[in-house]
Image 1: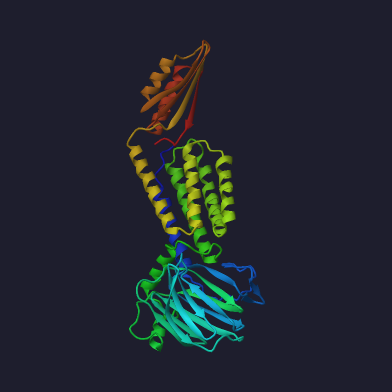
Image 2: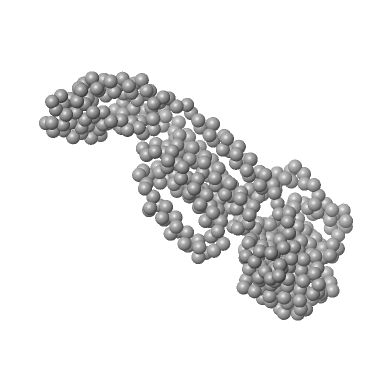
Length: 447
């Protein structure tokens, strides 16, 4: 039992470097490939019954809708649409929140950009147009802070600037009403840098170029986008980028937690074997939350699933239960896309554990369980055993004793400063009698 050097920095620092290496490249990537709706499962969308994928297009019947889940604040969206019928209304809604959103509304004879606050609509801009066509038409909308620019077939047809505060991010959605049937293809939505409103009309070529997401972003823009993605509080549970980021984070955070438990835990059981379960538990919990967060029924079933972990796991000490629930908590936080609060919670709890360990280190603590057994004819008296232990330990506490005429057994909690003191105590106890039996149970090691 040699003195073990501290490896806290050697394990935690590489873990955070690994975290940065995983998160930054993945988060820097955006959606650059249009959705062609070849997947009939519509991953990343939430739809009503008559919004389905048919022949490689998203087809939405009258009175139905399709939501593209995510947290889109400042963005450019482009899609091809073909609308059959001329007696109805088509809505493209964005920045959707509780009672607040924007709506791009296509009437048979005009187009309107509308802002809804507290369920009260306010028209921002409108223009006349030729009506719906059963031919494919490319629609592009750029929404950046307080600016809205609509282009149809690569021609800017409508723009709006608003005063006050823009709505926060949210999902986007197609709504079809009346007697229309709408088909959509080549859907692409990308984040753009937030911009202040321009004095000139956004219909001019210069203004459109400034707002265009194809421009090379500045370093500040990249950092801002990374931070906005990291602090996003909602997202698509099945969207590939979100899932990859959160699963990678859960793996790294669980590894960090396991190293903290191994080096700073005080449980008597084998901490390395127990900590090896943290990664599997955390990643599995993250995966489950990513799947069920869009379904109330599945979310209720999660309560029973997590109770299995609590009541079927062999928990010997409260500390094990605390770390187990912390691992589950990390998985729930990342599964719900709460990256910032999960990261801060992990850092804060590790800091509290570290401070507690340092404070506890200044006070002598027990680190071994010692059991002494002695039998006739050379049975050693309890007083002699206790005196020998007191002489060779920093402190000792008698926890239990069983004695009769033939046999004595005593259990102690003891603290050794180093390996040499431990060996001296063992030799001194063995010198009391050749019939003595000594059992040491390691708690957290010597030194």
